[in-house]
Length: 139
Image 1 (cartoon, rainbow, N blue to C red):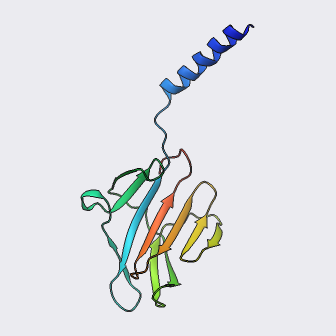
Image 2: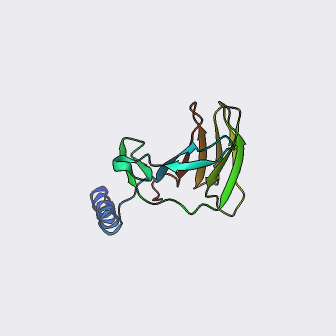
Image 3: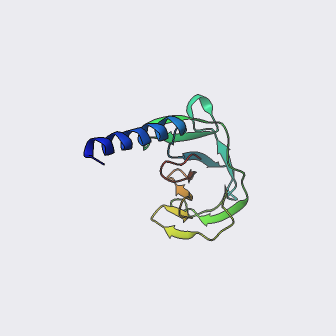
């Protein structure tokens, strides 16, 4: 097979793949929780465009759209807030398998490989929860 025929074959396969596959995007959704009382109870506060429940981040954060859904919360995690020193209970979704847990200065990451739940503690006592479903995967 000559180089020209090979190039044409590769272009044909690439065109076939691009026309038959759906759009792919990285899935990253952020939700904002604010303290309700001094007992560590948090409530979801709309943080997306047009007062949506959450914010869907695409194209490395350059595109922000409304996320009107929220993953089914299956766990309540209690942390000592690094800024306020108070205990806060954060509602999150965690898959059933075992994560790699990463601790940073002001956030905790539950890394499952292709899925991650990040808990960011903010100076005003609130908490952001971000769900990431990996590069080029929808959430």
